[in-house]
Every structure is written in C-alpha cells, then in structure tokens.
Image (tube, rainbow, N blue to C red; front, side, top):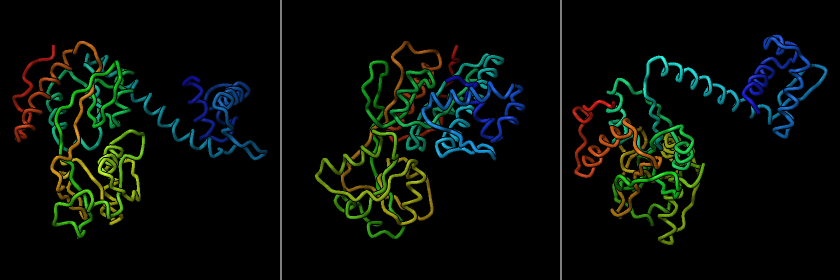
Length: 310
C-alpha cells in the first residue's frame, strides 16, 4: 500500500463517483477503478458498496476513511514541518508524554528548550507503550510516562515518585477525609486510559489487587479529561497522580490517601545512544527540575538553560 492509494481512496470517498474522482485526480477512470480494487484486496474487505446509483461507503470504508484523513493530515504536516526546518536550519526535538505529567515540571522543560532559538519542538501525547515505539522509530527523542517497559533499545530513568490521590465528586462522603483504598473500593471506580495497555489503569488496579481489595470498575476512559468529567458527573471516583490536582475543575475535589506510601513514578525514556547537543541541554534542565521537585521547590526555568546547544 502506498500513499497514492490512500489519496485516491479519499477522493473517491469524497465524490462517491469514479468519473468525478478521476477528473479531480487528472487520470482516466479505468486505472483509478483498478487502484481502488487493489486497495480493497490488500485490506481484505470491501470499502465501497456499488450500485447503479453510484457508490456508498461500507461501515469498514467509513472507518478507513476517517483514519486515512488523519494519516494524510499527519503526512502533510510532517512534510511542511520538514521543509520549514530545512529552510531555517532548526534542530528537531520530539517530546512524548502522558497527560498526567503535564501539570508538573514538564512545561518548565518545554519553556527552557523553547528559549533555544535553533530548536523546533514537537509535543506528542502518547502512552508509555507508544512512547517506546515512537522512540525506536525516531518520531520522538524523549518520553515521559509512568510504566516500566523492558526494551533493549531504550533506557528508562525514574525521575521521582509522585503520591497518588483520589479525585471525588464534590459533596462526596469521603470529601473531608483521607480515605484508604478499602474505603474507596466501596464506590464505583473510573480508570484511564482504556487503551492501549499496559497503562496507568493497570497500575491503579494493581494497587487494589495487591491488597486483596475487589473494585467495581464502572467505566474506562481514554483520556484524563474524560475521566475527570465522569467523576464530576458523579459517576464514580478515580485515582490520579498528585500533580493533576493543579487542574482545577468544577464539581471535583482532590483528597490525599491515608496510605502515604502509595506513589507512581515519573519515568523518562530515551534511546540508548550518545546524547545529542539538544538532549544534553534537556538533561541539564531535567536535573535542575528534578532536584527542585525533590526539595519541594518549583521555580521557573529562568537562568537554567543559558548554554547554547551548538
């Protein structure tokens, strides 16, 4: 399968008429028809329903269409960014992160790197599993997650352990307490992300399982914001890393747990290779931010990254 097949498919899906689609693509209709049939054979399913009145997308075709649009948009964005970098001689640095780390020191790292006038930053929200794959493929250069994953091509460093707290609907019976996991388990539990796994959801489930506590998982959400919205709707409770409490939202209260030893790590993932100039600069900023976190200080990045990259 080539990009041209995807582009042909999108035009045909937009027009739902092979003659008009061929005209838009400046090609004859018979070769376009062959290309679409080849695509269906390669995927292994019919993408279009054909009738005397024209074409219609099948259910699978509609799914493929929506995701193909995303793929082509990403390709076009990547090409445009590549051309911009080539024109300006910028150095590209990709950062992957799970949403729950974005309310602590990560923004300070980003600000520090943005002060470098020869760096183009790319921020990508990815689970830890996805970060490992993206690092190996070269799509990102550093990742921040919460899951330990053994991979020979990637090194992981635990920056620090972060307390776990509970997010409750406002007015919840446990609002003015420091509940135990046993007390929380009496209420419906909301987990995130739902996929891909393993993820923070498995870490949270493990906290209960290791203590022999049964839970009622009423809903799994793909995103942190969705999970918090469900909590605010009084659907259940959830567990979040402490820094998420900086995200203020109506209808939600955050309370510490009775067991202060319950934590989750913030893990930095990098490729196993000699660090580039940008990576050395990022590591210097990280060292300061981690030390500030451990000592209870949260200063800005002013004065942290004065060294040039090159």
